[in-house]
Length: 107
Image (tube, rainbow, N blue to C red; front, top):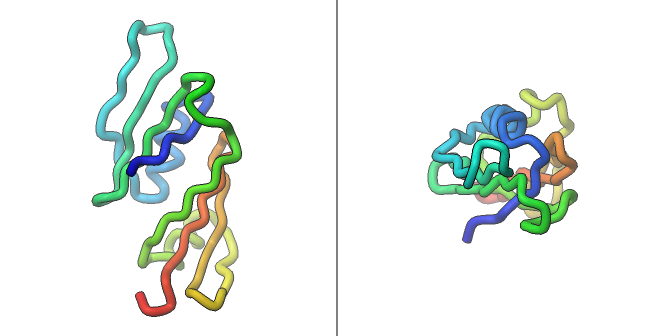
């Protein structure tokens, strides 16, 4: 499964997701002036970032499980919350998509 997130500027979004350790895999545009569709990956985790209206709506929530939660929190200056199931930090990308990044209590 690969979530699709709506972005207004794919290049800006790719730079933001790089701060989370994602690397751009490929980009597709039907024509140079048309919207972009991009895949970013961090290990086996993939996200699609789409400039196409209607592919997804801003404000989508995606949950990512990562072990280096403290490094993520430090990179974004965000607080880590201790929750019954582990530790989490919530981030918003430049387009308002929400990413809840968590580490399970047993991980």
